[in-house]
Amino acid sequence: MWLSENENPDLLTGSFLVARYHYPELKFDDIRKRMQKIKQSIWLELNYNQTPLEQIQIFNQVFYTHQNFKGSQSSSDYQDFCINSALDNKRGSSIAIGIIYQVLAND
Image (cartoon, rainbow, N blue to C red; front, side, top):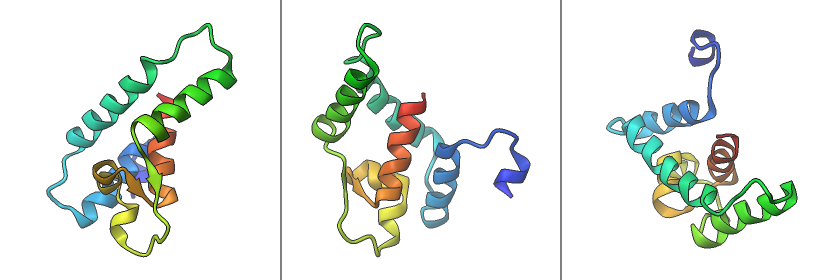
């Protein structure tokens, strides 16, 4: 339904809708603001004089080392797949962490 109604569906909105199923009180604006803060910390370290490889290395360093994002070993709990939980705990399934990484890299 979300895909058919939206000509340009985005990953953040889709992952928010999945998380909202389990957390009805969740607000999209809160998720977007938290993502914006992480994005800002990454992009402050980058500049256009760097090669693409250097930019990826810096992006990874900020995301995984400074922000401490990690994948969880066992992803059997639904919370590991919810974007809000991954943002709260800095830990989640490879899918949740991958979604966060992809949204930040695309912006």
